[in-house]
Image 1 (cartoon, rainbow, N blue to C red):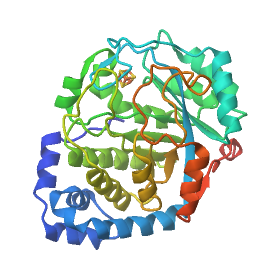
Image 2 (image 1 turned 45 degrees about the horizontal axis):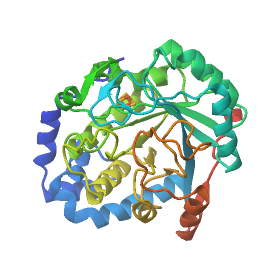
Image 3 (image 1 turned 120 degrees about the vertical axis):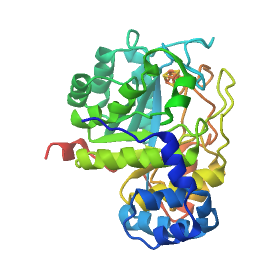
Image 4 (image 1 turned 135 degrees about the vertical axis):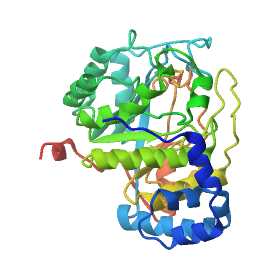
Length: 367
Ligand code: SF4
């Protein structure tokens, strides 16, 4: 079961050939195909952003109501054996490295539980010899009865390892391709196991096959042509939907943020672009969870409430141990929305939406 993507250049050509007529046909279609999506991602769609916003808002409210699910990340470790040119955790960066002990994870958990979070994302660099499956299993056991869902964003694992973590209480896995453009992928992944594009591309399928409830995919915006990334994400999403219809899927749109190493984005991605991408994805797949993290400014996140995204992180710290010790450095990237969960909840309510800290219970899994 292998997902294969047509060449990135061919996908680009498909997008850039689209006309205003194609965009209008796509906007009148109830079920978009890949050609329609290409039109909505194309330069010809830029004047139609308002119509796209209106449709995206309507679909999102029909499918998700007024709910915004909230989650917080816990950074477990910033050790990493890979050299991704854009990342503060890259092996060659001289940052203070640390991995949380199980006791320290317990302290971070207490703080987030006290703040009312029920959905936690465990994040780490990719250093399997430092932070392996046994450690993750221990952390999962520690958290499973405390939180409604525990997700991981760590090194890609094997099918057996995902199955083991699912049994231990992990419910979902986020694994972003970073870029679907093979040429750019090779340019920015300079050393380590992550250099293997195909192994990473196959990972969401291993996650779903192992029984996880949800898989998160996405691309890091700022590396390659964002329109084509959008089309590639959608093709990956559609393939996963077909093969693993029981698995929920989310898509994230992280834009490159300043980080140790001072990597500059290879292509500019402004807020208008990000907005077009989000609306296009929502029109293409009405049920996909769309994630907007604290990488984005508060002003932008507030402005997007109700229009497409369904899941927000809040009060995030991206350094291991950063909730217990806010003075710690060694973060993966700078957060742009630094508001507390209380402030984010107030902003959500002020827009007539409902901040939801819990929308799932492990008991559902048993039936
Ligand atoms: S993006 Fe992930 S794999 Fe790459 S250097 Fe950062 S933590 Fe390591």
